[in-house]
Image (cartoon, rainbow, N blue to C red; front, side, top):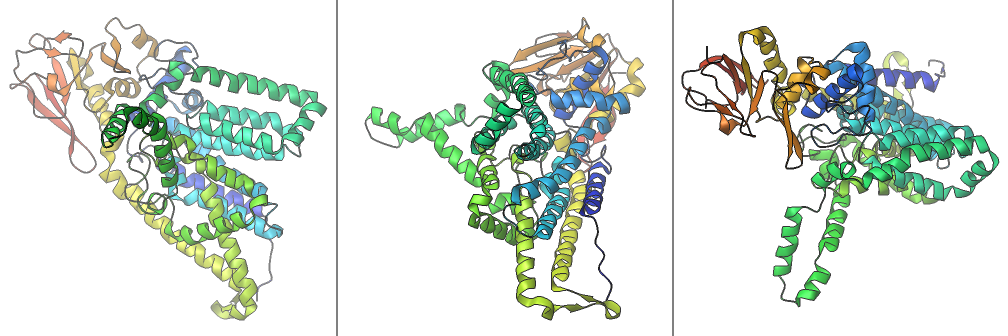
Length: 583
């Protein structure tokens, strides 16, 4: 039998984090197969800040980015500017902050799980195992891994939150952590919209639960009190003010439970009753509708179908028909939850997290939503780790060394080690299957959902740019101007001051009809006769009878005499763009 040698858990944590980082950065630019329009917007606005100190609308160092009219929060964009400073304007630079954020979450999950559970586990070794397993699961579970590769603000906000939350808990004993904790939590609310609800709720709850300790801090340490008050004033107060403005609620208004469809459902529900109209309005109204829908959405967040079987409906946030967590987690997650509930008083911080995390996502349509409920992470991984450690310790204490397993060449392995090893083998198998699907099937079958084809179209333009007077793009796939700006590395100052730039707000969205020699038209406005002009949304005409024109369309509906030059296809072989020319 080999003599036991103790290994520093921080060494194991480093190896887990390194492995998680490699999974996230491997073929980063190519999978997901293309930058989507939000990533492109992040990247180009970051480039504009880097080059001019203003966004694509000419606003100097904005605290909220107008972008397409969805008003993006600023932190991810500013960090992307720093990334682009070192790596240039490309997909790798745009996604790198998310990779780093995902790796930070892996690391902090170790320390945070130990801090949350130190009153529950009396055995320090068990607590270390829970921490290491939590980090390992964060590194390889589909939910956290998938969202750590694309440029998702939510993933960066998660890293800010878990780090800030950990330091907040530590600050109840080591007061010096309080200002840094509030700074990180404050940054989370300027990174992702769900955190504008979740982070304040968590922060207020923690401050109430530990109010006497925090009161003592504020009374006995004036420097920390001043710094903490200043941070709250600078980061949280402006957020509240912004939420009272249209720009602060622009995104929420587009995804809120209450919309025209909801109003229609309320009216239809009233028509099914024959009560007095006043009673109908009292019982069936937008408040009762929101309450019922909210409760339904909250519960659905924890449905096995969502977590373990099918995941979300949006192809950009998870692999379709694939769980967000591995099925092998399920029994241990339930066991961990039961253990936490049994130790309610000592584990109330985790239960508070479980209760508050789905609130922001439950206020919106399309719930349960993979991205909007990222605020729940890494709780499922922590619960699974708790359940696994409890199960293995029970097995070891019950069976003892009687179940020690004969190993190779006369070695022996204890029941506890054998069970950990068995779980790791099952985890490796599950992760390997997921990685194969992610890096192969998903990339090939769902490249269309990532606006694949724009980079390839831009490559063609770069080789033929000077051969044409006008380059015309269909608007069908959304925001073609932004993709051209990004991939052509268009000078932001030149774009903002372009006399040919036509952009406008319509239906609460910002549209671009043209800039420089580029024209953007609806697919149904592409003429079928060579003598007919191309018409933009605002009625501008482009006459290609006297100009050399290049057209990127998604259909065969083009002027009759135009020549088909090339097809740009998705990775599944279907056509993304067909390129035509009148010369």
